Length: 114
Image (tube, rainbow, N blue to C red):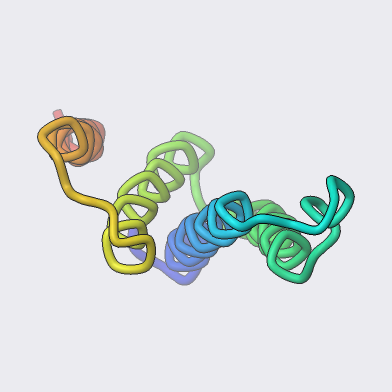
């Protein structure tokens, strides 16, 4: 299962997590006016990263089974939590640990060969 297309899909999930962090960072700032909330370098960078991840996903699907795509993209939730702890200084609470655990259990169960 691990090939270049899988790695591209995982990198795409990581970049999607970075884009979500960028968008949250911008949302936490005060802007001069409402238009600057949407047209500023941080927001534009976040949306450009999302566009890049869509292109990467389309390319990655050319080399992996379609059933693996949604499983691989769920890793973005894990990346968001990790990045929010380090960049946004958010606390890791019980609900986040349970959520990450459920995602990891789902990935493992999905990959068990019966």
